[in-house]
Image (cartoon, rainbow, N blue to C red; front, side):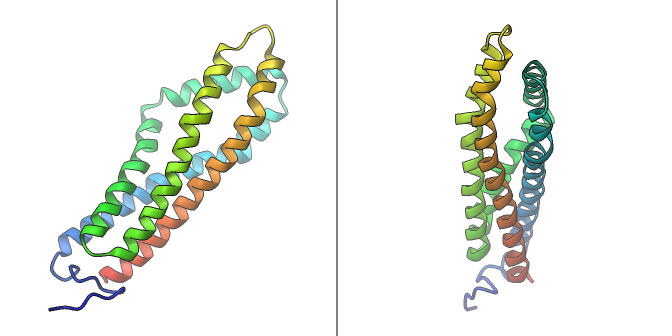
Length: 180
C-alpha cells in the first residue's frame, strides 16, 4: 500500500484521470477568478477614479449605464458565477482525489470569493437599486448617498477577489507538485 504524503496523495497513482480533472477544473476556476479580479481591479483603479472627477449628473448617469450593462451581460454573469462554481467544484474534486493541501488552498480561495460575492449582493445591489430609485432632479444627493459606501465596499471586494486569485494560483502550484 502506498503511503500518503503531502507531495504525493494516496490516490494520485490510482486515479490519474480524477487528478487530471481536478487540475482542469482548478485551472478553469483560476481563469474565471482572474477575470473577475481584473474586472474589480479595473473599477477600483480606473472607472471610479475617472467618475470621481465627473459632475454629479454624469456620475449618476454613467454609473447607472455601467451597472445596467454589466447586469444584462450574460458573459459577465456566467464568469461571475463560474468563478464560484468552479472553485467549489475544484475543492471537492481535489479533496476526493486525496490532494488535501491543494484542496485547502482552494477552500481558502472559495471563502475569500464568498466575501466578494456577499459584498456584491449585500452592499452593491442595494446601492444600485437606491441609485436607480433616486430623485433624478437631485443627482448631487444621489451621488452623496452612493459614492462613498460603494467605493469603500468595492475596495474590500477587490482585495478579496485578488486574494482568492492568488490563493488559487498557490493551489495550482501545490496540485502540480502532488500530481507530478
